[in-house]
Image 1 (spheres, each protein chain N blue to C red):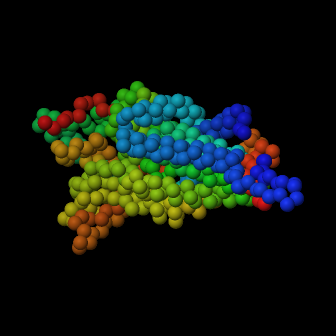
Image 2 (image 1 turned 180 degrees about the vertical axis):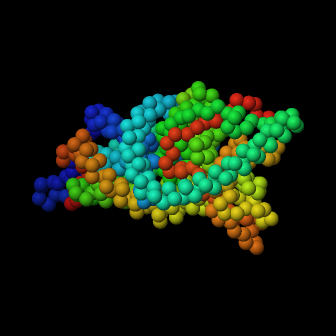
Image 3 (image 1 turned 120 degrees about the horizontal axis):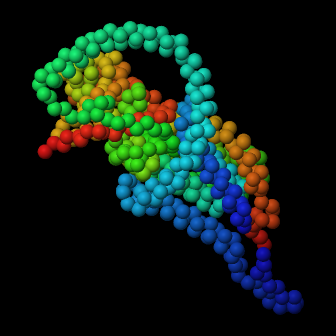
Length: 313
Length: 176
């Protein structure tokens, strides 16, 4: 680097030293570096703003949909490669808890067997009465829904986001708000869509709320996420309602004309693990344990309705 | 100066890291910790190739990750851009030729990344479980990421060998 220094060699002559100049190359390099980072940060903030304001429409959503379509084959490939390892891990992980779970399941089986007999009797009565009344009903789960079995190809990149991406989209008949389940129970609903992929927002997301009812007492409430990670609560259940630990919570279907439910009636959600109430709170504090293990979701079923959902006039 | 070959190699590695992260590792939960291969890769690339390269790599990798998972576009880009830039600067200055630089960078950046993500989610009005992320999950996540650093940095060091002294950024101020 040239140094700005001039020295006269003549004795007694005035020694002049030029004013120190800044280091041009260093400054230019630092300026360039900061400019690039500044532009990238600004670009990120613009993307966040645009994406946050219109998450399901607009050009940004188009870019995202196109990107997801391009990435899909790679995600599917990675998923297939990882599947055997995941299965082995799941197998050994399952063995650890197998003995205790076996005892619990045997007890459950006895109870469910008795319940089945009662339910079969009730079902016969119900069918007979419906026939006598010529009853017109809304779409029933699972009879009036076509299942689209699909694999999860991507998960949210952090523990904050409660959604997954599935390998089926509008090309398979899926639409926005299509309910998604597993054989264990309710998973969530479709919130973004491309022709061959869809984003499913889980019911554990803080934006999700599902109208639900206690299968035993019929008490109606809203299932939504609780305070802790993976915790869910049944909210808006009045103190006079009869809800007990062990009660099964299922989707309630539409209860209000103004706010039609996106989920069909009768999909199991979880089991009540604790019920409490205080003098000051207007509702019961009900904690539920979802049947679906959201940490190990692998495949899901999107429910495409075969029957028109009635719309209130 | 970054050669096109380096850029192509880094792009391939980051793309692979994105795919593995969103398809496989985002589902892995070990003692409340979640390994973040993408973050570790960006940090290692930034250490080996400097601040600008790290920032650009972080932005692009974050953009692809956000695209593939339908999350808010720009969210991961912002965090990874800052992570890449900061690590790159550290690698160019204080951390130059220090053996512990990758481990230290990954540990610090992971903690900052988690905290930054929490704050951003909070500012966007989304679910931001501070207890779960900072108390329960931070230490396991940092440990997992540090463990990931060994193979990732070794691999990247082979693919993107550190620049020679002559190619490095010169920032020596001559005094006097």
